[in-house]
Image (cartoon, rainbow, N blue to C red; front, side, top):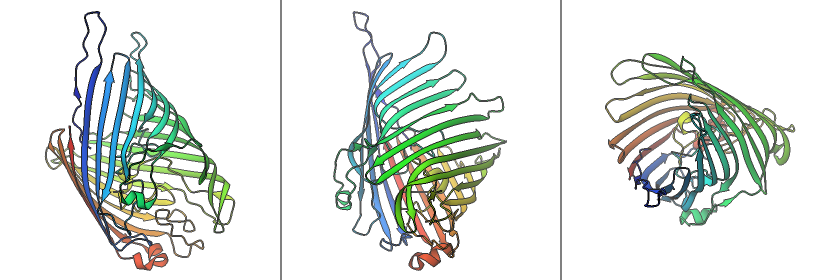
Length: 439
């Protein structure tokens, strides 16, 4: 989203030669109206709407090596009622999502920059499919712990971290309807740790990333011990050139799942995710970029065995792959196979637009459509979830100060929905319009 540069006071040197701190304050407010009709979920009202309000104010004090930073985020939902789709992805009122101490140091003349942070932080890792600071979602995932990042002069990037994820509170429906403020708490029974490395770019601009992430969760309702290993190879888009992205992940360990309709812990977990895209940017008016995409994330093949093969996306984001989330977001990064085409273009300076079309299927017809909980363990309802057409545009109306965005998605249901939830089988329409003011 657009953001103004922080208002800063330059670092100064006092009469004793000591460097004073550089202070900065920045922030933004986003108001987004969302409308969905009809609802595709089987337990909600026929139609839904929300006015999602999001306000962030960030503070920092910087010395040559030391940085103190904090961010207050206020996420609220208005126009909700008793039948609305409402969760902690919409509401997290008056929450200090970041508060950390940072230390930066560089070995002499090496060109290497080391940064250590300790406290509460947000994080984007790689393409953001496993760990992300949410951008479309009204609330963000944050973590308590420590991380170390080492950036080299040729673009190499090593990131190592150990965190406790934060549980967003309150989570009960009545409190969320009232936008009640309560401090989030760390999931003390859950550890998230790992390492990420980006290699320097080749002469062809190709990039390679490798990572390993471990999640150990022993909360009352969350028992997971998962190791995720991944690789990503890509080439950024540029005019009159092909670009691509290939990402593959393998996930092993133990998890909680359903066996013959009964919840079980300690299931043998074996899952995977794959993403492939290929595109070309034309040297023409509007800089059109045409891209073909394919995604697969495994689902559980047999509901009666002691294995869980459903991929777990951890704390990842999905809007950039599968369309808007918010009160919409029908497509999860679990038990899903999808292919489609996307066209992005720039119709005028400070404008960006995109249209896309994708077909969505269950990767395993015997596993659930996890967004809704619908499942046919026999697999006789087929695997077709349907097709989605999407359009989106954004306008940076006042450079770094005022942004406007709107979008529309049309979801035509497939055989699986028609068989398992006939009352929700009519096509769904989703619209949103957002205004962001930055300072």
